[in-house]
Length: 323
Ligand SMILES: NC(=O)c1ccc[n+]([C@@H]2O[C@H](COP(=O)([O-])OP(=O)(O)OC[C@H]3O[C@@H](n4cnc5c(N)ncnc54)[C@H](O)[C@@H]3O)[C@@H](O)[C@H]2O)c1
Figure 1 (tube, rainbow, N blue to C red):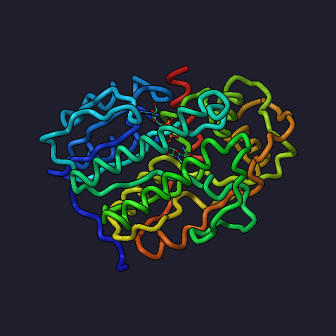
Figure 2 (spheres, rainbow, N blue to C red; figure 1 turned 90 degrees about the vertical axis):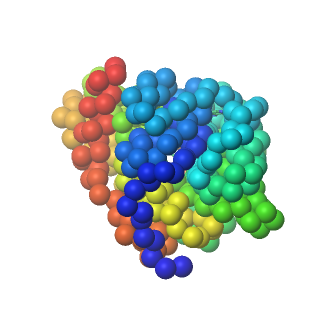
């Protein structure tokens, strides 16, 4: 594959985004609206927020449909659709115990419905997969050809296994029906529009530091994570969407921090007086997480631009505005 050349504009293109009220998908909707595309958002608000849709509704070319995508899609009979972005899935570990069946259904039946629509419309399809397909990885950093180490019956399996199913379904539509598909494996991402009570590490630490509460670290904090700011992630998704390679791309920021280091940095950046407290490590918590992004960097000019310090400040500013 040659290096991806980005189009100057998305004017004249129609992009359907499933999960439009969510954190990453709403950021992506705004990115494409700013590039002149007609964006059709779908969401059932299971984890998304109406305020994200209100914000997008300020753009004339945004249209919204409230649907549960694994039950039914809107009628798009006479509608041209160029791109379908399959982004609808709860992604926070706190949701895994509460709505596991909904998570499995959206990533299986929901993805199937979107792939059928892509086939019918001759649209390019992108599946938002996850680093969780690698499970608790035995190799480090994780490259796209690593097939993973996933517990099929553990507390995270509703998410990990249904995303693996979504990838398999996507590749099956590519091979059997020639649907023009792409897959991104998203690593930990954070930024404005996340739920403050989302349960993921960055919103937890920021909200605790802002309230002067102890930052909760699970285990001894030596497990590692890599954090990508949302606008950097959206740039990476755009590169993959415009590429010609149907096989998965890791996307994220490879800077790696221990969770303890992360907590200390958040306290320092926000000038907080909080301390750190330690709780037992949940079962199947991945010990190391860092994307190998050689593949996307070989085929594009993708480079994460937002520093951890700036990203934390901007996310904290957003939480201050909503709390
Ligand atoms: N944020 C991350 O760090 C991260 C990491 C890996 C993968 N991802 C993937 O990126 C996508 C977006 O994640 P996010 O963090 O923005 O999560 P999010 O929960 O903020 O967004 C998901 C959106 O999908 C909607 N949704 C869920 N089920 C639906 C259904 N049946 N019908 C219609 N809408 C439905 C939710 O209401 C929500 O608005 C997900 O597919 C997720 O698996 C995110």
